[in-house]
Length: 415
Ligand code: AMP
Ligand code: MG
Image 1 (tube, rainbow, N blue to C red):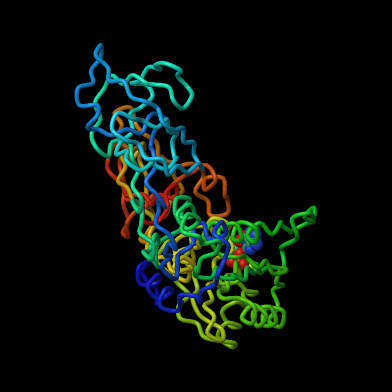
Image 2: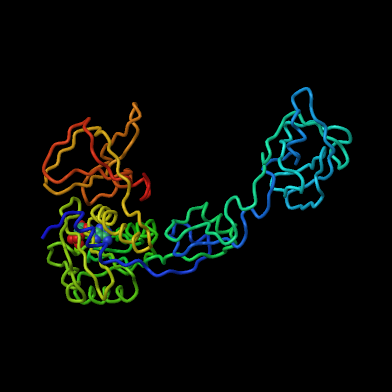
């Protein structure tokens, strides 16, 4: 039975489980999903402090201050960031204060240094300052607990850790946080024609490029690739490799060996060691996409052609790996763009063409194919930044008409 892409994707996700959690240093949590709330042990900010370099004052003292008729205040202290002063700022007094320095008692606002001129004995405590502006009470003061109160959460379970979250965790006193584990993904390339990258391919041979492109896609999806040695087109070798992969990995991805060739052993061995759920999806490139599992470990058999591998991973494996890491945003954003040229579609299956999205002169999105669409060639995927989706059914899509694209240049969850 041939499935639609949506049916197939639902079945893939249904075979996956959200992985257990682990505690990692906050920098390693970048891009991962929090498994527990992160609470602060202190108020953030821990004390009222100045948002500006200037003078801590009592706002009421400056009620009459204007350009030309300044109010003169006595400077009673000088507070730098990291300092602390218990000296009260009384009526008619001010404290020289730097950004981030704690507010002295008595003062309720900070006037920026730009609105002051030095008076007598300026620069030292005991001098004066002329202020030519009023301030509102609380102006330029950052309040204690403004970000969060002690005991409250700065980050919530389920949130994705970005650079700002790393900073919040640090402020809240957490050197480590609890996140979902990254899936260990076994990457197995099958084929007697394959040689290692460092080798010069002999007659009839090609380099094992899929192992690397898939591993890179695993990394980009937040997973940990385990690149297996090339699996020869032989049932015993296939059996042995699959069994090892099921023992070591949270997810198994293979390339090649899923067609109807005489030496395609992926499906029979999958059925022997585990179970196969489907082996055909109505899409191009890559109609022989295969789902199953071995010992409960989800197994996805990608076709061997480099672009079929690439697109199949993007459509089926990437959402699965994200799901396992606790992400709830599993779909890349989509946009509607104007076709830059005619596109003919010869087969009924849904097409995912490698394409490039640009801004047209009028500011709208325009999409054009980014190179040859042969599934054996990867350059169009490299040059492209989206997949142009042509719906099921044969058809002709004329230049100037709208078409849907999957944004490979944007993260899941972007609007
Ligand atoms: P298969 O699905 O095994 O029949 O392979 C389909 C096509 O993909 C053949 O032309 C293979 O040579 C090519 N191919 C298979 N595996 C790889 C690989 N690991 N790297 C690059 N090309 C591959
Ligand atoms: Mg093969």
